[in-house]
Image (cartoon, rainbow, N blue to C red; front, top):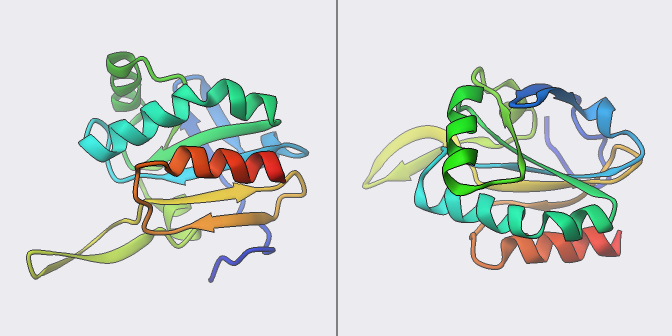
Length: 153
């Protein structure tokens, strides 16, 4: 299934350090759902720190932020504690939500092909529909760009 701007966001339920969260729990609110490859790697750490740093501005814009990877809740807890992260982190060890959003893709590294998480972000409107999509995200300036889109929505 292809995810496009205007399509309904695929439903999900994920475990976080604070308990389960679901798309339905964000009904009537805006949600930034971002997918990242792995806790405690350079790019993923920078991205999580940047989203955490802007969390109060996202909240002022009526927008929640949820990062998702295949890492366990225990790994997310360590990652968050180590870097003083305030952004919520969802665990998707089976990759069902990652796949539902089309973020499980074929990648190539040094000529070797493998499957992995495409660093991607989805802005979901209060109506539960996809308002904006960022694929193959470059971390620098990304959180600020997403915040601007959330404020404009």
